[in-house]
Length: 68
Image (cartoon, rainbow, N blue to C red; front, side, top):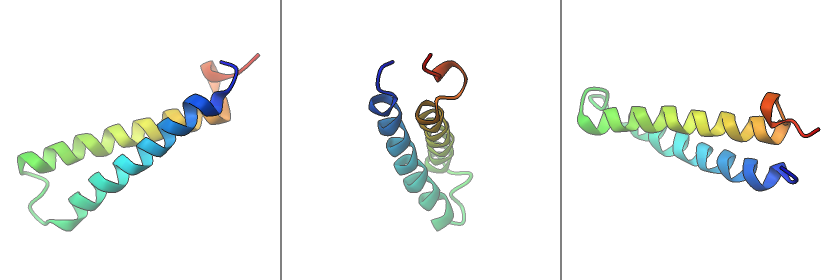
Protein backbone atom coordinates (compact mmCIF):
# COMPACT_ATOMS: atom_id res chain seq x y z
CA UNK A 1 0.00 0.00 0.00
CA UNK A 2 1.98 2.94 -1.28
CA UNK A 3 -0.55 5.67 -0.55
CA UNK A 4 -2.81 5.00 2.45
CA UNK A 5 -4.84 8.14 1.74
CA UNK A 6 -6.11 6.62 -1.50
CA UNK A 7 -7.83 3.86 0.50
CA UNK A 8 -8.41 5.38 3.93
CA UNK A 9 -9.93 8.72 3.01
CA UNK A 10 -12.87 7.39 0.94
CA UNK A 11 -13.71 4.87 3.67
CA UNK A 12 -13.59 7.60 6.30
CA UNK A 13 -15.80 9.98 4.29
CA UNK A 14 -18.32 7.28 3.40
CA UNK A 15 -18.43 6.12 7.02
CA UNK A 16 -19.05 9.62 8.35
CA UNK A 17 -21.80 10.25 5.79
CA UNK A 18 -23.46 6.91 6.62
CA UNK A 19 -23.33 7.59 10.36
CA UNK A 20 -24.75 11.07 9.81
CA UNK A 21 -27.71 9.99 7.72
CA UNK A 22 -28.57 6.89 9.77
CA UNK A 23 -28.10 8.66 13.09
CA UNK A 24 -30.29 11.60 12.14
CA UNK A 25 -33.08 9.23 11.05
CA UNK A 26 -32.91 7.38 14.37
CA UNK A 27 -32.92 10.56 16.43
CA UNK A 28 -35.75 12.12 14.44
CA UNK A 29 -38.54 9.60 15.13
CA UNK A 30 -39.69 8.23 18.46
CA UNK A 31 -40.85 4.81 17.18
CA UNK A 32 -37.98 4.36 14.72
CA UNK A 33 -36.22 1.74 16.86
CA UNK A 34 -38.84 -0.99 16.34
CA UNK A 35 -39.94 -0.34 12.76
CA UNK A 36 -38.28 -2.16 9.83
CA UNK A 37 -36.80 1.13 8.68
CA UNK A 38 -35.40 1.70 12.15
CA UNK A 39 -33.68 -1.67 12.11
CA UNK A 40 -32.15 -0.72 8.76
CA UNK A 41 -30.98 2.58 10.21
CA UNK A 42 -29.37 0.77 13.14
CA UNK A 43 -27.54 -1.50 10.68
CA UNK A 44 -26.47 1.56 8.70
CA UNK A 45 -25.21 3.25 11.85
CA UNK A 46 -23.12 0.21 12.81
CA UNK A 47 -21.77 -0.12 9.26
CA UNK A 48 -20.92 3.57 9.16
CA UNK A 49 -19.05 3.35 12.44
CA UNK A 50 -17.10 0.34 11.14
CA UNK A 51 -16.20 2.15 7.91
CA UNK A 52 -15.12 5.21 9.86
CA UNK A 53 -12.90 3.10 12.11
CA UNK A 54 -11.34 1.33 9.10
CA UNK A 55 -10.69 4.67 7.40
CA UNK A 56 -9.00 6.06 10.51
CA UNK A 57 -6.95 2.88 10.94
CA UNK A 58 -5.69 3.08 7.36
CA UNK A 59 -4.90 6.79 7.58
CA UNK A 60 -3.11 6.41 10.93
CA UNK A 61 -1.44 3.17 9.75
CA UNK A 62 -2.48 1.10 12.77
CA UNK A 63 -1.66 -2.60 13.04
CA UNK A 64 -1.93 -4.46 9.75
CA UNK A 65 -2.23 -1.20 7.84
CA UNK A 66 1.28 -0.02 8.81
CA UNK A 67 3.71 0.62 5.99
CA UNK A 68 7.13 -0.93 6.54
